[in-house]
Length: 526
Image 1: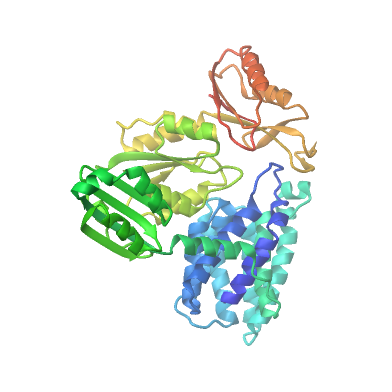
Image 2: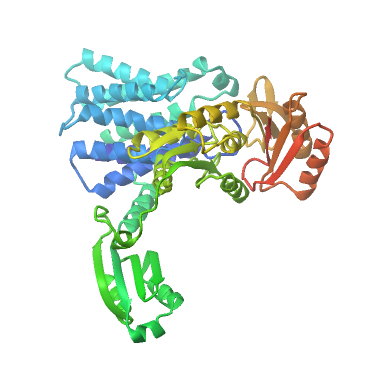
């Protein structure tokens, strides 16, 4: 199983750019292929790091790794497929073709359950039809080998993928098959290659992530509380000591509190850390432990006063320093880096949730392809109440933040936020990365596109002209407020021209420097 997974992971990684190229929307992003590859690579890295050869341990470790590493809707669905696979495996130490088939069918069922409104002609169709065909083959050939079963599975996945344009008109118009289904097919083909004795070679991506994970988990967490001696009080220079410690460790916390020094550091050389500290006084308390053992409380934490937990907190997703500062000004506790060019993983959200000192936490994904990962993070969080407000754009996220009233109940806040995001129209200006056809309109690589919601409403070769026309589409007699957010490629001249253009409309204008990639301008109209 481990060999099949490695082969599948590398096959997916080798074809991620091909899968990305199948994305219907011609926006410059790292989307389906990249998301699925990063998701699977994270799962595989956990399997390799575990060092286990036990089948149930391998599938359970993979499932957890995929779940936490899931990025984008395709990555979340992929994680659910193998979550269902693992559930079916249970404690079995060996699988025959029937067992494997049952596991794939269960994976298909869980994937469908994870999606609120399943759409046919996607990865869901490919996993359902291929696993169903495989199950029918096993039922008719109960003595078949795993190799024979997987060959049928792959053949049907390819056939099912070829039929996706007939189920989704947008695929047919763009002359492509579904990108998520294509990614899944590469996974299954990786299984087959291994069973055929031609495994796909171990890729650099897996090796790199395993190395990074091991780096983070290596060494010892070394902590002490030190009482400065009389000579130590004179010779201890915090900045100099800090620089010395940074040479032999990381994740450093150094606190000088009167005559007491508190230290926490991750290092491979705890002895050197203690020797350095001993120059300045006597140890009151020392704790050294393997960094993978996070069960013991920190001795620094023991001496820190408990901070009272807030009732509510907020997390938003954004890319661009200006946008991050904007959300911080609106009261967001943590801004997770990400957006169209890089969808955050479930683990990114879980980490952020842990850092927010609040009982109830609202998450604003600000992108439709990030909502499922945010919801998955909410599901795996037990000690806090996490509410995902399904914001699909930056303007919706801003509207949700602005509507936050800490005096209201969590239920009332949720209702108010959901109402606020429905009153916002979102426009975005970006450029096309390939030639394609959408809604009967030809789009050429390099064209600027004005997008309203998910619909391309303006196409042209002049960025400023496209933005003005998009503003005309978005604004009507009921419009009261326009938020114009400039991206990293927007010039001062373009910004000045748009502010002047907006003077023609009877609306209030809030102009912001977002610094976001991909989108030259993001527009919110209320």
